[in-house]
Amino acid sequence: MENTETNMARIRRLGRVLETVCLAGAVAVIPLIALYWACFNLLPGDMTQESLRLSATPVLAAWVRSLCFAAALVPGVALVVTLLRLRALCALYGEGRIFTLANVVSFRSLSQALLAWAIASMLYTPLHGLAVTAANPPGHHMLSLGIGGTEVALVFVAALSVVIARVMEEARRLDEEQALTV
Image: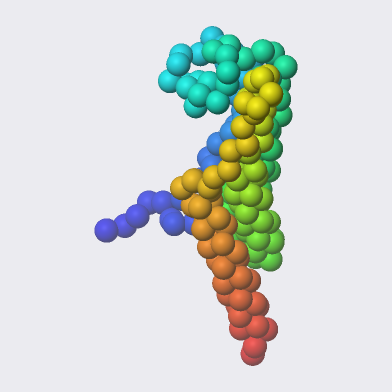
């Protein structure tokens, strides 16, 4: 059974598609966060209940929503950086570059961005708690701490990607040595 499209051609095509998807995601993250907090008071209850559970009022003032937006920028910017680094890796795949030094460096950079995103996501919980309760009366401000499944998963994926980057570096080094051996 003959395959009309080679595996490398599929990798290149998928790399180009994912490069575009990552760019679109990176461009959309910050405006979507801004839109959410700008329209927060108009959104359905199931989209706002977590934040309103902490607030003393059912409507958040503009300055409180601005603080919430600033808190959301912490993991939001980390996500944008992660998507842009993933885009760079996908661009290499789109060019057909698989086990080059540039791939190893790009993958290592991606793993660092994933770790930063995980840490930023952990910081979001206390920052959000402080922001959403900023207008509460004295004694009713909240500092929430917690690590959820998403943060644990991000740390795991980041750690796994660090290991994969090291494996890729070793494979690239061995391939280079073998190419130089006569």
